[in-house]
Image (cartoon, rainbow over all chains, first blue to last red; front, side):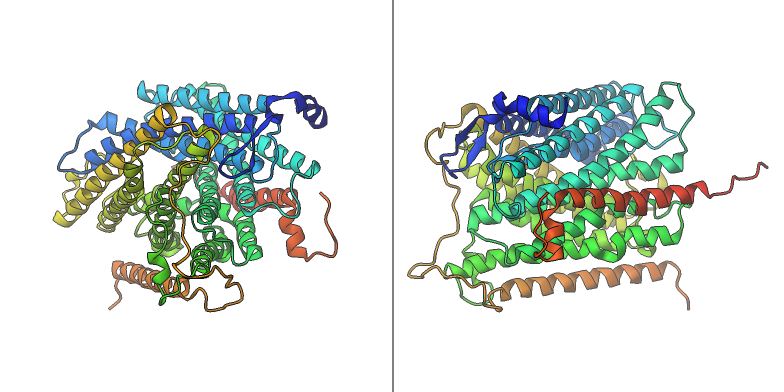
Length: 570
Length: 49
């Protein structure tokens, strides 16, 4: 069936029906709503599974406890990586794509049938992978580097998840096509939809790599073809493994802009610059998969330097633009509401009790100050040699993927669940502290891993004691990681209980606005004004950005110093 | 997609999701995948001892 005939046939589809949201006044496509719910709920189930695995791993790497036996450690490493980095994230991102392509631009979903196919393939694939891992037939860790070989069901499951997600991404683009064709919006796409489109484009490249690497590996595992070259496998696999995390970055930034608007009324100070930053992501962020091959001998230094630097740091520039424009737009909105005392007075007036806002703000801080600075430093070809395969690497990506992406997605859920399930959150007091607990816990995890890794502690290693080279400081930081994990997983379980409890038992808000989490208020006696032409209206953000750049410079210098100490020339 | 030729080039690029899709797939496929693949294929086979 051609695209056009599918479009015509689907006019009688449930996807074409809609309701008006009592809170936002926006049209909600019922077909899209159903699949946003299905994908978001599935995502939270995989988050729960990955979280249970996380605490088991942390209490094993904490040598004083050393919980799991060796075989179960590597089994749970595999389980944790795939549930957290692939299933939780991909399901939630498909939910975000369906939201961004329909509700902000008043469109209907292209096809519910396509959405069913996508969802079913993803779900069946994820269940297959999890079952075969827990049966002990895929102890190959998330990367499944050849010549390690898992049961064919493992590869088939990943292929189903990848292709199912790709079908969901197709549904997203097809929805954008019919929205433009039907003139459901005027001018450019809204920024949140544009950010989601950037994430979807990055996802296409990611999932193509997944298909390229997994099909011949599945064929090999079935005994049909020869073993793919392990160096080739590593290179293509990281086109799936790292690029999938870049999808997160683009989706997370889109969520930052959305929550900043919902909680404070902030609008981008210069939308063209924000869009240009997303374009830099689309064009260059995927090159950084090369980070993982910096100690591989097969590829040369020119390839490594060009790709690991995101084409000479163009995608880093994009992240720094977003890291400036999001808080700057919030500051402008707050000063416009009359909160103009000093450089940082506006920060005190922010809606910190709103869990969506606190989650987004903590996500931005943890992602930028910890994940971003460590990522760019560890991705430097020379410095990487003192960090590769140590706990510094998971220390970095737990700040980006968990402290950044997961926390931002949790924040979004505090709006998505009341708006789409039409039930107000239960235990709202607990919800208000949940992002702080989770953010604090994951920060400790990241710091503990990073410092232990700086002392040479290897990643993905069951027992470091036989090496006999790690002193009390390394063990202290493994303990910090363990305590952080206990706090973070407790906050994750709290999040799951709050979400599930709300979906099942929350008070219905049909026909009325959702219960307000609290938005930024105009200062007493002040009149709301626009500061768009006031170049000093963002001086607080400029001060914060200067602190960020100083931290970046100190950390970068300290690492070059550490590298120089490895081979001192006297 | 309809574009207005009077609009700045950057704006027209940013409004053209399909062109961004093509560029976003082509650039990493050439820079990371194809270039890396070629480098791996050019490695001479190790002589047997």
